[in-house]
Length: 368
Image 1: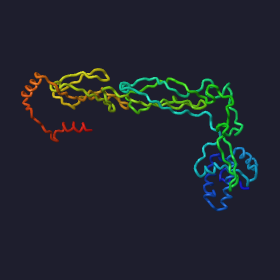
Image 2 (image 1 turned 90 degrees about the vertical axis):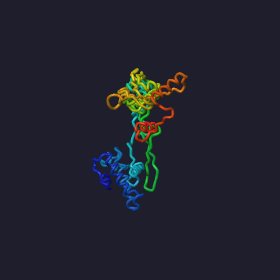
Image 3 (image 1 turned 90 degrees about the horizontal axis):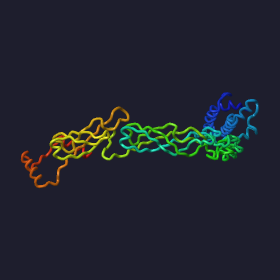
Image 4 (image 1 turned 180 degrees about the vertical axis):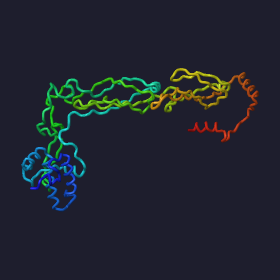
């Protein structure tokens, strides 16, 4: 009988991963679906039988001390169908029982903030419902300080095997054990509080610091504040997504703020100073003589704090000049007299040309 290690082309001290890699490489070449040569079919059966022995710790140990390792003759050797599929489709995750303790899920919560909170930052306490470790069993899922017992069906392997005949011999398939769910053990005395899961649903308060300058869509990561994993496993992360509420009269554009104010045409003509509301309280805005509708006045540093950078943006005041539409006789006569003093004829019209960049610039901005 050929040496099993030589059949697979590996050293006697080869690791399981090295043995599996060698088998998968040979199986891609020798499988009957790939190579129709009848001689290759026998070769394929040999390397598959060798892999079945060397991939099993007990059978490999028996073989290394002089036993056959096959337990029933070379021609009747069992081999894992899953391993053949791994060789062709790149599968082959970790076999054996899966752990009861696993990492928890990440969670996402949306938090609404107003413009003041977005500009200057704030502290919040989030009251959320999540999975926490069961305090009664300390996350083990077992009652009365008991421990899980080895599954009587799969004997702790976490999977069961079924044998079927094929043209290549006996094909063995593996699947998670239905009795233990693939864990390899069974909780015979589950905790009455968490029913063996190791965690329960509960509400808890989590403090979060919302930095100045956030806006809708920004996320804050709170490491380890997500759900506790099954079996009392490590917690996932909690992500806080910001939703900024619209302001009553201020409009945000990145770090700048915009405000629209209307003033009488007399104030625009003669110039004045007005008080406007801002996030920093009332501020004085100077209206220059001859201000027209659509012009802007900038108040430096009264915008939103820059999230990535230093300082704050600006507050931009958009001026609307109001023209009175209801005049009494005295007011009308005074305005006509004012027009005469200025030499403004009632039918006077000024047609702007493209050289009037100020006018056409405002028109373009209006359409944008």
